[in-house]
Image (cartoon, rainbow, N blue to C red; front, side, top):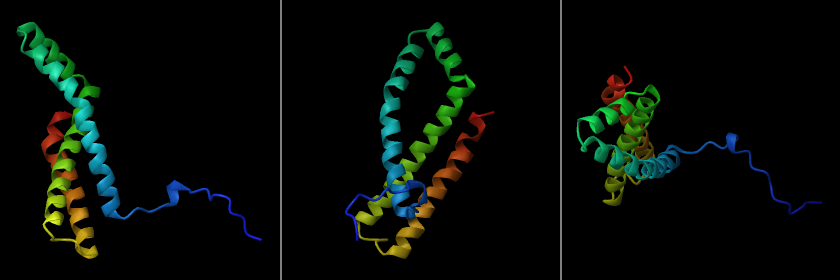
Length: 125
């Protein structure tokens, strides 16, 4: 006798393909960038108010937790950039086949990680 009850999905056991993971992270990185825009606008406006405002903004940005957040936002920006380029290429009709899509997904993911470490590595010091 079979039941029509819903099946509990164990999300930790579902292995997403790289294209799905890159797509989800592309959306998350876009949301993070949008959310961070007002914070950067406030800091920029404060820095333009004069030497005291600039010093206050610089002191805020020198906090180690803020630096870690900036490092993460740098990753979000670079991931969004590389994945966006990947999607433009796919929209042009290239890289639609599954093996190529997997390769470009890993390439975009890896390029964002490497560039984050290269560009943002000095930020954490």
